[in-house]
Image (cartoon, rainbow, N blue to C red; front, side):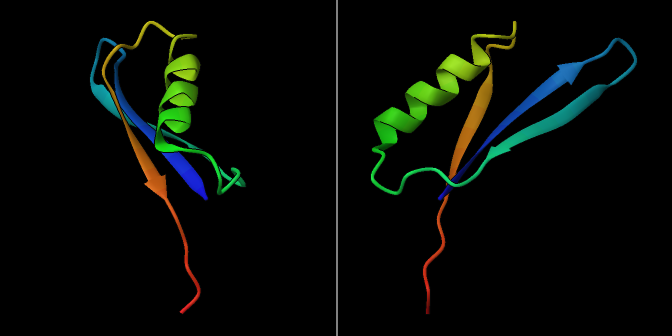
Length: 60
């Protein structure tokens, strides 16, 4: 499982869309645990608006 955190940064000249992806996460993690991880990661920055996506893959 992976999660992707999407956010925007304004560098003065333009607004850039940025994403950070974390892979090989434990499949047993709850959505609440994933949100807490993303919140802790983003608290290291001064960015307050972001989106978290859970990316799963299943064999078909």
